[in-house]
Amino acid sequence: EEEGAAAAARLEASMRGVIDASAHSDRAKSVDIPAIIVAWNRRVRHESSLSRLVEGVLSSAAPLLESTDPRVRLAAAEVCSASLGAIAACDACSAPETAVYDTMKRLHPNDVPQTHGDNERPVRLLPRVHQLWPHLMMSLGHRLGPDILPEPFKASLELLRRCAEVSGGYFIARRMSTDAWPQLARVLKVGVKHADSESLVKRMETLYLGADGDTFFDDVRPDVDEDGLGGGKRGRETAGSAPQKTETVRRAIMKTLADIGARERSRMALRDVAAAAVSVVAPFAVTSRSDGKSSPATAVPSPELISLARDAVKSLATVAPDAVWMALAVNATGHSGAPTPAAPRWTGRLGAGLPTLPSFRDIMPMHRAGGAITREEAEACLDLLVECGMAIRTG
Image (cartoon, rainbow, N blue to C red; front, side, top):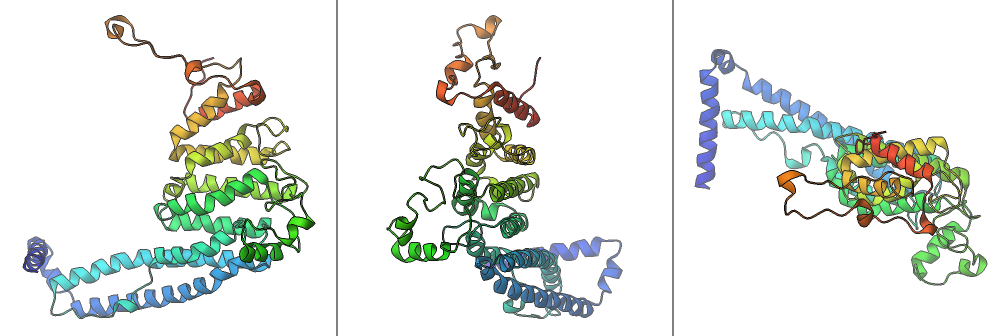
């Protein structure tokens, strides 16, 4: 306590010294301290009232993200996104206001009263993101959540982007890895199934009977698994999936990844998922055939989806450049006619006694015949490497 009091005294003395040494010291000493505190108190109370009002709106709208009505989910996502933006603005304003109060309190400890309690301060942003997160995850393809429909799903993805932006990215980085990305990756890989009236009952049986237990629908639709895939075959769309919905939702996911990675304030939200995401996203950016071997879809992705996937890969490269280079380089050199990097060699006296590095093919052998990629795909991977600034064309 004595050390703390001494430090506070030194701080106050240094601040008074700055004011006394200033050419405007007389003007500074003539400042009406009570008027400043009254104005400060009015601003803080206004910010507190506004932020608590918006917090109430956010708390009321968040559970509606799980509604079975797509119009309600769409409206709830838009309201939550706007509310987060307002709370973030109030939270950003409260930091300098606190600095003003602390400075005045140190300079004039006897003239600056305790103007309000902690329960009257503006609400903080990160706890609100924490409270919103479970409801948001239910709206992004959770197995017990509502059916995926393009417009509400895109609104939820926009809300996810807003969470990454206002929280600085780091706060939700681990949650993106454990909660959000597995659901988004499943949608990219297997597509979106047709909405049906059995879905709610199926979810309730899964909830109460267990995820691995036998349910009524196992007998009714034995050829469709819980993801809506005929015969349980992953990696391609089936009769249980909706091609147009799948295309729209995949575009939205790619755009969200690209937007999050393109903004410095939000890109760290991809820190823990970038390495895993590139292996799922990259095939959409370089695919050239529809046999299901090189692409997660049975049909060739549309030019719009390919373009958005390339943007997503470039954004992932800003977060995990090594993982992106490895994923693309393996395919860029996976064709028999594709060029390969030459191993560096030392010449002259520098190379005396140093070991010879292995060739590129020794480190990365060719694909087996069943998994080989086409020349067009290899060229597309090389082009994407060049666009990411990770390779240079020499010829």
